[in-house]
Amino acid sequence: MLFETIRGIAAARPGSPAVETAGGESWTYARLIERTELLGAGLRARGVGPGDTVVCHGLPNTPDYVAFILAVAALRACYVPVLADFDRAAVDRVFALTAPVLWVGSPHPGRGESGPPRTGLAALAAAGPGSAPLATGHADRVFRRLWTSGSTKLPKLVSWKQGPFVRERLRWIADIGVGESDVVLCRHTLDVAHATDLHVFAALLAGARLILTDPRTPPAELLDQLSRRRVTLMSALPNHYEDLIGAARSHPADLSGLRRPLCGGAYISPALMRSGAEVLGVRLRQVYGSTEFGLGLGNMDDIVQSEAGMVPVGGVRARLAPLGEGSDPDLGVLVLRSDCTSEGYLHDDEANAVTFRGGEFWTGDIARRGADGSYRVLGRTTDAVASADGPLPAPVLDALIAERCPAAADSVSLTPDPEVYAPDVLVVVRASAGAASGAAVAQVQSLLRELGLHGVVREVESVPRTVVGKPDKPLIRRRWAPQRAR
Image 1 (tube, rainbow, N blue to C red):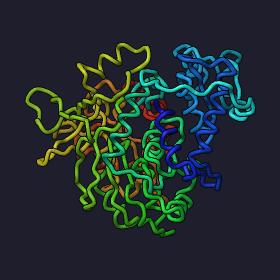
Image 2: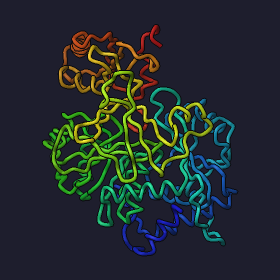
Image 3: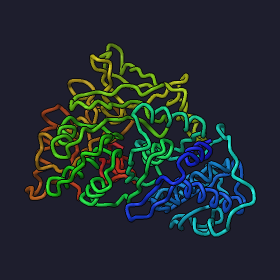
Image 4: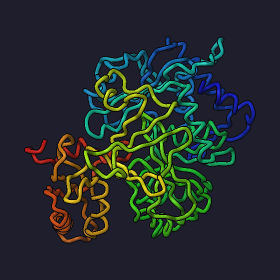
């Protein structure tokens, strides 16, 4: 269904640009379909068929990666990325969970001697066109399994069928108004949902133009790409926009064409909203979703309101579950419902029972409901700290640190033990350039005492982040949490 839908779009606009790279490579919609059919024939020649799993690793952000995903879907097979930060145990877990028949891409140091045969995209394409056309009509087939961020424990594999995925994407595209004239820039690795859902298929299912850039592109260079290419839509994490804002202070860029600068994946502070408007000249549009659910909330309002909340996107319903008896009814756990969502976690009944209940998706995030019925997502329940005034989400504490502790350039707060709700907090902080030795730690410790929290503050050279760009919470806990709190 996914390939069939995009093939229909290509038939209507074959010569229109579909996928480009920042380096200048450009494919039309017709060429994308042609390459998809070629890779599909190569996969089929290596024994990939309906229900099979193909793992991939080390594939760069190129049009070929996009064609590979479409080819797997057209074969009624499923792809699973092996992420760059996986170790030997994680790779073994991939094999045990998915039983892949083929490995596509570069070798992985943790693979060892086990696993399926390996090939590259160039070798698949070199097999030449197949005699049988790629099939269609696979709405009930799982075509991908992507990893969650693993905020508290091990990352989990989330399965999506083609039908719900395409319907959810088309509904969201209509909700935010993506069209053929849009130019969508993706700076995330295509191994994750942030890239495929908010960029790749938002562009291709709308008949728009997709530009792929290297995830390691420096902020100043990314600003230049956004300006030169007249990009109209992109999505990034708050820390990515902070980097762009920092670069724009010394390298101003014209981003007037960026009508949909989406921001999600983590708490968005009022200060970031203000800086986006003042320095970048854009109104950051908040979005909220997950690998498991798809997009749930958004705010496309053109009015700059630093405290504006988000409303459910088309087809989604939202509510708050109480945090406890007698708790504030407008502060609770965000619960979402949709008829277009994932199949849940692969081989993890315990996690599915906690997250998917009675047709609802329990996000695990704390949200506050405004008087207008909108929602403001504050952070994970597993990172909420028991302050004197009630639950204090860790990202809100980080916003306070940014506002009140000038010696701290970057910080991540979280509970030392994700299963214990207590006034204990672990803060890792990177000092501002030129700050006196120990000043950042001292300022953060003073703020924690003021809030009545018990805290351990560690100064680090850089805050560890995942391949997506989110704080690597399990790694932070392993490295810096006090032994007694683990």
